[in-house]
Image: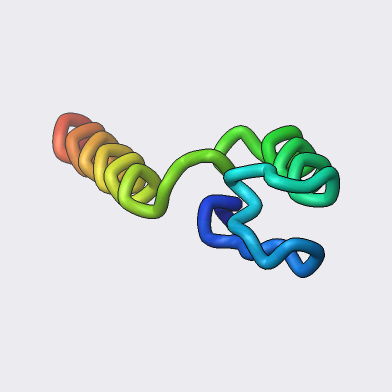
Length: 63
C-alpha cells in the first residue's frame, strides 16, 4: 500500500505530509517495509507490463 493516500487518525492529515509524530513514524515504517511501497499504482502497472512483455519476448525467441 502506498502511504500517499493514507490519512492519519491522530491529526486527520495525509500521512505523506508528516505533520505530527505519528504521521512521521508511520511514513518512515512504510518506507522501510517495502521498496515498492513508495511507488504509485501507475508505476507498478507499467513495471508489470514491461515484465510481461519481456517474458513474452523470451518465450517467442525460444520457440
